[in-house]
Amino acid sequence: MSEALEATGMFTVEEFDPIAAIFSHADIWHWHWPDGQFAGGLPATFAKYLWLRFLLAVACVRRIPIVWTAHNVDAHESRHPRLEESFRRLFLRRVSGFHFLSDYSRQLLVERYPDLIKGISIVTVHPDYSSIASPVSRQQARERLGIDHDGPIVGFVGTVSRYKGVTRLVEVYTSQSVSPSLFQLLIAGKPNADLKDWVDSIRNTPGIIIVDRQLSQEDLSAAYCASDVIALPYENITNSGSAVMAMTLGIPLLVPDRPPMRELAGKAPGGTVNFLDDPLTLEGLLSGLRTGSTWRSRNDGALPGFSWSEIAPALQELYLRVLDRDKF
Image: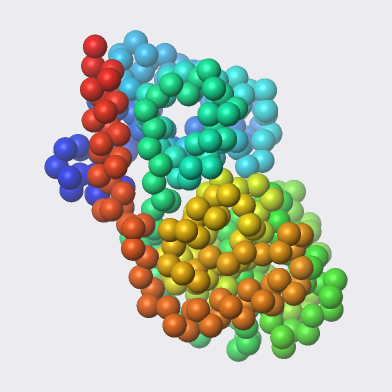
């Protein structure tokens, strides 16, 4: 993002340092994940809550407008809902510009907080990960991860979290006594604390490949590339970086038929985004695997419209509009 914005010649972008920001000058503060500060224990979370409130007060006193990329309307898995809601309402009052990654997320936030969403807003696609993705062949990817399987693989890649529907994915696979020769299931990523025991319980299940660790960028790319399709049966979703990472690497998707995923399908190359049955079924997985495998064999890897260089002008325009509105 920084390089693409600076290439426009209008802005210099510096990484946000909350201590330095108090004393240094900035025309805009651009925030991404304030809800990520509420994931720890209560004492640490409350301290961060007070610190974030202080930063909002500093921005108000110094008349620094805040732009927010609204990755999610709610935290994926809320641990301190009252604190989060208290901060969210304070935060939304201070946001001058909203950068949404789907029309659906903008609609959801406006419906929930109609009295608070007063800032200027834009909607863009979620930018691709071409700057960090490391594409490799399917064979190379499987060798890197130690996967001894030549047949089809349906992959689930990323933090192993309950809201992502991963337990249902495994349940569908195991309940039908699927032959591992038909296809195998790859679960790659570090599990959240509440799913560590569950991951251990399926570790030796025939046909299920477990790579349960914090993945390096190279291993993350390999996990995607080792898969014939990526299944993301999320229970709740407004946009998905995991989906865009798969698209960046040319791996087709199996996703729930939800408004933000329909938006993504409408902007992605044809055949990239395929919809799962609801509720999830083995037949739906097999159908998506066949469709996705055929598409992957013909895909040239192009993802037009998703690069930061194509998105940066819209973000630059948002900055300029915010500065123009807030200058008095």
